[in-house]
Length: 550
Ligand code: G16
Image 1 (tube, protein in one colour):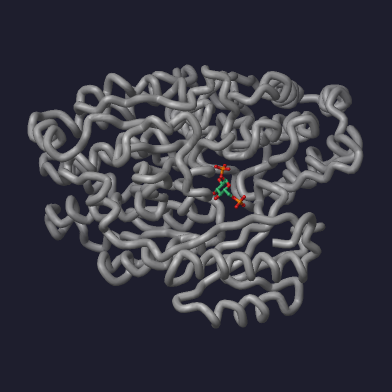
Image 2: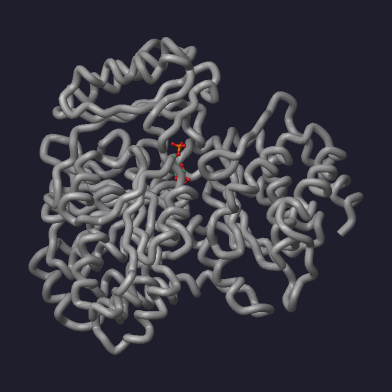
């Protein structure tokens, strides 16, 4: 490639003055109107990594749960996972270059420098390609054009899959790198693997008979007016074979706004019924995905309003309980030295952590917020279950464990776990694969949502967010459970917490929105609400709150 071409292409995508993007919890995110230069440069970066690693990479244009006017970009590495954290500083540096010469200098000296991540190699076999997807935001076409320009400036191929979910793109990038020089995978291959495993698992009459008596056939899905609607529609026949009638709401076709009063983030944080679902009968089985369908929470409408929420913690416990049941059927030698672990963040409800440790007796790890941290921690086990409370997560099977299961495939429990490892997206949390997993487990266990909910009772909790002048003034430690700056803030928070029975609270700057998040839990709901409000006030007073005081 020729850096002069990069310089010229870059001049079409100048960075807005006073815009200083930083790589956050899940890539870059901001008002869509500011992002053309950032997405162009992410195109350069994804192409650079393809060249450096001699593999296909990926780029997803989405701001996931954020409002419709925002957009963002998530970078996907050849293994289908997220771009390594060691590359985030260079990504931020590139995104902040003030002119085209600086863009070229950072690319040449930092990205392609042998110190940063190995030497460039030539493409083996097929053309190196950056696989690109986007969500349903109106800003997608122009940002897609910026991404394509960035990739092509480095003479790397770009392939757009159009409107796909984030987990689908991760899956496709992983598949594209499995066989050197093979044609790029079609989107259909995603459904073939995930739905194929589901159909194999649900084959046979026992499951259907169980479902008939124990679960209503209706599953109402809130699609957040996002990309999930179109892709979830393709699951209807598979679920029908299990006797489940899936009804899609907030599909975007009725003019509803993306993530507005709907979607997994809204339902999990506000604990309210999504818009357009007031007619759903009390007690029905419902779920919500987010704007790019990588999060999933279940819920049931309650009499008199409100919902009974089954968040990411409950999904983790359901998966853990079920997998434990199947593992108990495996021969001991297969499980020799196999490590199982569950990864959570500080947002995990105290009751969920207690259930994991005291009832399931599983080792638990707490990481900072962000799938990139949980995924990495889960990879350290042979079977790593990770879910954030907001519904983002998956179950990872190690190569060693999968090999052992394959060697004993004749054993029904080994076969079942092997199929689960295909049904569950191994690259990233996935709402589509999650729905199939949960529907399968509920049928298999003959459980209703109420049975699942009864695994343990959540401690009442409350989440708030507020704006401060500069959220980077708030820094944390110990997996975000302790606030380091502004000086004295943690002492003030600790003092307030001590007045509440079973009180726990923490604050952290969001990595996806211009906000500081506050989490509190206590013995009763009014106390959790009050604790959250008092902690939010401390943040407001000590970190330069903006707008009305909480
Ligand atoms: C992203 C990350 C999640 C994280 C969430 C909220 O989700 O992938 O791991 O929990 O942001 O992060 P924060 O609290 O820093 O704003 P999504 O679904 O928005 O991509």
